[in-house]
Amino acid sequence: MKKLNRLFLITLCLLVVTTAKAIDGYHMLGYGTVSKGMGGVGAAYYRASIVGNNPAGRAFLDKQYTASLTFLFPSTSYTVTGAPSGDGILPLVPGKVESDVDLKLVPNLGANWRLSDNTAFGLSVYGTGIAADFPTQTFYDPTSENTSVTFNQLYLEPSYAIKFGEKHAFGISALLMCQTFEVTGIYSFGAMSQNPEHLSNNGMDYNFGAGFKIGYMGEILKGLNFGVSYQSRTFAGKLSEYAGLLAEDGKLDAPSVITAGLNYQVCDKFKVLFDVQKINFSEVKSLGNSINNLLVENNLMGSDNGPGFGWEDMTVFKVGAEFNASEKLALRAGYAYGNEPVQESEVLFNILASVVNNQHITLGATKKIGAKGKDLNLALVYAPANNVKGPNSLDPAQQIDLELGVFEIELGITF
Image (cartoon, rainbow, N blue to C red; front, top):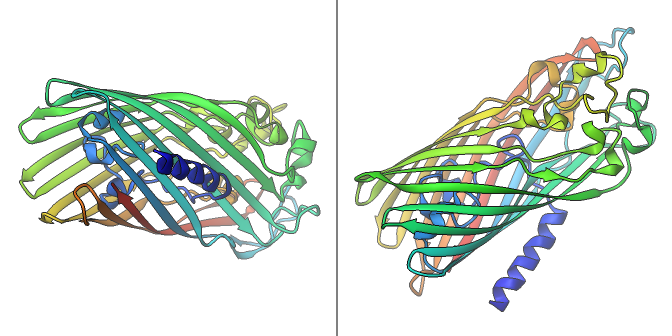
């Protein structure tokens, strides 16, 4: 137990200072090495429940601990084409600029304990977020030499699960969130903000939030399992240092998520899985409000109806497979596809948050080692570069092309 406590403390520290380039909006494709190796599926597979995912699956897990480290290699850039019109409010310098963020480390931890034959308690720690650092004055801010955003979310998720009979279970989790936020290089928007002193370059701000998650998992037909989970909106305090940027005086909640999935055991050694996930970005004004809100009187940045990133809700379809090649080796593969939350009309603000991925190809493996219950886990995730191109909202003569590609390696151990 002392070793586990030390692992959790190390993870808490690492997640505060590192940020992932999110895969599905600002969510990761999946949490835990098993899930990621199969395209992020896991709603109906109990082995994927040790870190995040469906809390009901913990009722089928024995006592278990897991730790993993993700190496993320994002490639983020934006390209501006077209000369400034001379009539625009904020023209941009033509050319391509690449982010200096090219490697991030993201740890994840999970643990599960049996309380009785039918009940279990679990704990997981995981994180997500966005990071970009462009070595230029993108928006002509004379107070900063670069334009950057750093957004971290850390979740601590205690869970309780109970079985009904041998093949059905329900689970519930508390979601305890800490998030940090920092932006530089956008002070030039001061005339459009209700609070320009709390718009940009104010260092790292943080707040806390809370929500819940519920889930069901069970065998509905012989060999066919169904799972569903609902993650509530996580309500957080205000990021007061950026009350002139984020809508509702600095409010940035985490959106609700609903996931449903199937897990079909084709034969003893092979299973296929399918998940569909809906992420409700539009319910959070700082994420869902359009930049065009600026054109309406009194809708200044930071106000209740001020502009946001204009993200649409995201629906992601995931398919995965697992093949037990031997008693000591499991092989996995998966694919995920989802609509980009960033629309063509919203590219200007999304220079800071180029979450434009729409597909992911994954491979994974688990190798049993040594004593019973010890596994080495591997997941590889490749998100091919994708682009979203649209007009500069504040100088429509220009076009902005956002691009993001990601390669990810996750290594983990279960014991």
